[in-house]
Every structure is written in structure tokens, then in C-alpha cells.
Image 1 (cartoon, rainbow, N blue to C red):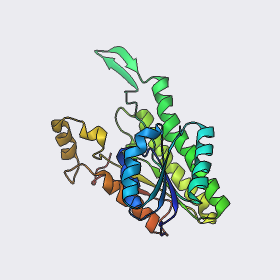
Image 2 (cartoon, rainbow, N blue to C red):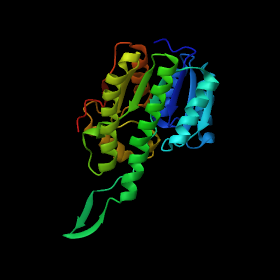
Image 3 (cartoon, helix red, strand yellow):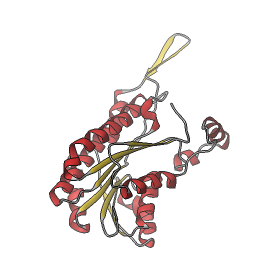
Image 4 (cartoon, rainbow, N blue to C red):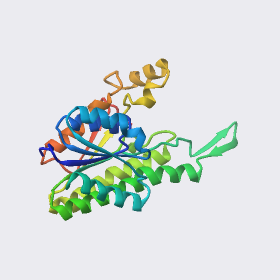
Length: 253
């Protein structure tokens, strides 16, 4: 797909992978609807994308709220035109052990609040944004592209019961949607990053980052733009659908 002058929505676009994907696609001079909880937080991404030649608008929305998702997506279409792409990237972590014991004595367990918070954003949020994107694409006949951002944690990662469950879920949804929506010419895929040099990783002590890199066969942490390249590939290859791209430097959990 040639995405020049075509509207694409990215959630969680203020920083990290969302910002990197926005900038990579902006170079194709597409129209970007960038979503995050706080509109002001998207300004830096918006300005960077505009400088690359894209038409960009920023929107504040809570992806866990059905009304927010519906109204914001429809406003983006009203502002930028028919929807051709949606990247469901918004996500959070609330890491904890399922149950923690010390010296045979119970200390704590993952709270229902932390479980539900991650489910709400990472799984229900992707369901809501993906569903709205699909409806808008079908209504306009755009034969668009939907990308769910998963993670290699979908295979199960220590201390991430909630996060791993959601990332397995969004990958599975991508496969289901690819099958259901192919009749409308809509392609759906997932990207599963490993350790990527986002703001959160960059803030870690150097010795921790060195240990992380040593665990990866390629001996380095991935860069956000490498994830963005995968998104770019998905848009450009019109036969690629129903798959998940693992970007983990040959790591396997």
C-alpha cells in the first residue's frame, strides 16, 4: 500500500514505539491521527512528524473507554479522511509475582487491581480500537491495515502474568481479525518486540542494560526505529496478513 495522503491512527503515540512508528510513517507523507491520554504529551511527536512532511493531528483519548474510542476515531476520519491504517500500540505494565513467599511465609500476591488495569488497557483497549478501525474501513471500503503491538512476553515472562496474557491475546486477535476481515480486503498483523531501547530501558543502569544485551544472541538491545521498520513493511507488503513478526534478536522466551 502506498500510504501517501492516507489517514493512519496510532495509539500510545507520545513516546517510545508509538513515536518511532509515527516518525517512520510520516516520511511517507501520510496523514497521522496520534492518540494518547494527554494531548500535550503528543506535541513533540506531532512536531517531529510534521517536519517530515506528514499532516498530523493529536487527540486525547482513553482507549479503555468505548465512548472515547468511538468518538475520537470518527473525529479523526472527519478531520483527515477515510481510515487506511491503525496501529494499536497503547499499553502499560504492572509487574508482580502471582504469589510471593519468603522463608515459607506468604508476603503478597498480584492484586486484582494490577491485573485488571493491564487487561483494560492492553487487551480491552486493543479490542475497542481494532473493532472501531475495522468498522470505519469497511464503511469506507478502504481495504486498510491494522497492526497490534504484541511482545515476546506473549510466550510467558517471569513476573508478568497480566502483561503476558494481554500480549498473547492481542496476537491471537490479529490472527482472528485477519481471517474475518480478509473478505473486505483488510489485512491484520502483529509485531512482537523483545528488549527495545525505549525511554524505560534507557533509564536503567548501564550494568543492567549490559546484562540484558548479553542475554540476546545478537548481543544488543533493539532500537525503536527497527520496530517502526517492521510496521512500514506491513503497510508496504499487500500479501502479508495474519502473522506476527518477532523482533527479538533471536531471543526466545
